[in-house]
Image 1: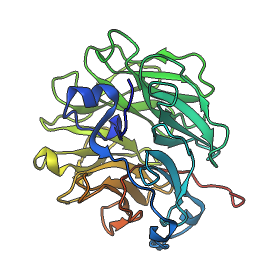
Image 2 (image 1 turned 90 degrees about the vertical axis):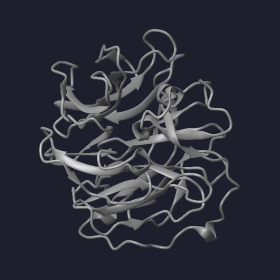
Image 3 (image 1 turned 180 degrees about the vertical axis):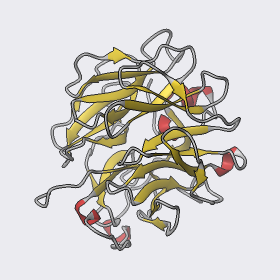
Length: 333
């Protein structure tokens, strides 16, 4: 499962456009090899933040240093900094609930694995240590466990399933056992549920299960693609992306109640839009938008939770994807 000389946006941001993309966990956006981008080209502070969102950060993936790395920036887009600084592919960041750790995916040991590091990039450690591909970490709200997806059961590339492990990598346990692809776990704020994407019913939809894997239930019933669930901080809403109002080239972000009712479209954009990640106060959503390729590279945007005031945070010629909004951080951070 080598990632060669490019990295691709993680599985929670794909649309099952190809068998290879879905199996490797990387899909439609190509994260290009780039010439390093100078500090002078980075954007100045661009977003006026309300309340205490100034005490938050957004982790994301970027190719601006010549390969895909995990970066962090202030929630207004300022002070963008490389955390991983590794020649391998590093992607798919996920903040711990206390804001002290970031889980991520890297192929630095030969295949995609779940790693963890301190929030400043220090103490990077492999948690899964498995010859199969392990991807898309999602922390439990108490910080004690990490859900992820893996192809370790069955033949290589034959199936994606949801797993859970302790935050130190121990006691790795399979939660789903289905011939379809189960991927992209997102833990509910109360720790009782995990939302995920599956194609088990012949089309790609959002599902939910108890955190122990029981009572797996479909939430979206639409012939289109519904993917990439992200819980709101109060647990009442789930954001996701879908092509239900158009062709696959025009993926948009939607929000629904946690029971699957009252689906509302938030974006209306001619680009591919994906990766919703809520601010910790539930008032804003960070996301990725861009058609991909050299002419229109993906960028990190932020909008109000009702879809208004969409603003580009990264403004960079490289690929910037896969935002993960931190919890509120203590003042010393």
